[in-house]
Length: 506
Image (cartoon, rainbow, N blue to C red; front, side, top):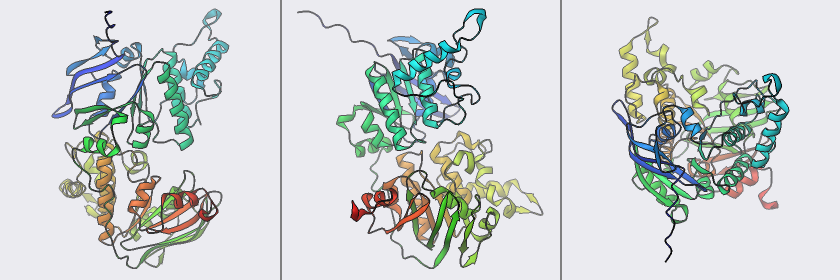
């Protein structure tokens, strides 16, 4: 009998990789194979070690133990350029293009084709760029500046750059977090095309619907350790969640039943020309009211206007029956409103400052005496609130940038809850955080409502809206198109209102 040919080694593998940062063991003996012609999902809670693993593949970090293999042979990536030369490319959630350069110049930076006299051959560069986009099945003008391009188009440019470098291994790190549904589907079409042409793709996402729709195998990590690798067809979402958190989550949405009290927040006829129009709603003590709708419906713009960050042309906001001066966040804070913004990194935290300093930013004057802030007072307050929020940090003096996304979100919540607000506005409270931390955030919001806090929640995740809200206000093109009670709301009824349709007309 003829012998079977030996198995082809994977384009890239980690073997027994370990990495520590001081006393923190980020990776402990992790092994992973990325096979040609396969999309491989990497799942785990924030802090599971996914980012460290990606940086090791990309040549940013070198393993303390174990090694990287390319085509079955051990290799050492001393720097990111070594990983690129080995055919590895990383597509990040937020690409870093040169905004003032053209699309083609970004793709061929430092490798531009040259004509006579060593001048850049722009026609050849543009033709090569168009050929790359043709392979991806998309069209972007090679000559247009990168400035102003959507995140989705920027990611496609990064993928085209990877193809131009003959990349065989692509890592997609949370690539869909800032994309619309149409943009996600376009990205998936490109990813499937690359897989079918023989590329090995590592896909990292907290969105299980994407993982199960796109990927062939799933590797789960927990606390820096490898847990398992299984074909997608042999798993369920519940099974993946159990592997990720090491326990059953009894309820991802632990909503407490509460009896709403008096009206705390009133929004009447709020209008900003071209953005939102005649928006009105009330929120009672102990009630969670969700603003739902599609991207661009005006939800975030409304809550920012309520808090005074953005202007509005007409209407008014009342807190406990008293009108609020518009355009004055300080007045909103004094009246008892707290806003946890959608973009925690840019708007909710000062990333270079410590966990301690971020957790007390909203209370610096309250904690000061005669204009002086005592270090011991600040530390005591920060310690109390980070303990309440169960923030996992090596030290309160560490920069908040060193924390996982979920723990950063908890610091933002701690910062605002320490002000003892009457109204808490949370915009996309669980975006980009893992399923275990989502459950903790949901539990916290439910407990706060149970204590009488009025909560306004903006969310793009329908299960979150349906699982946590007492009432749902659905927005469509800047207007409130429906108000639904918890009992009335279904995925269908919310989506009909979000798309401007009547459910009974469908």
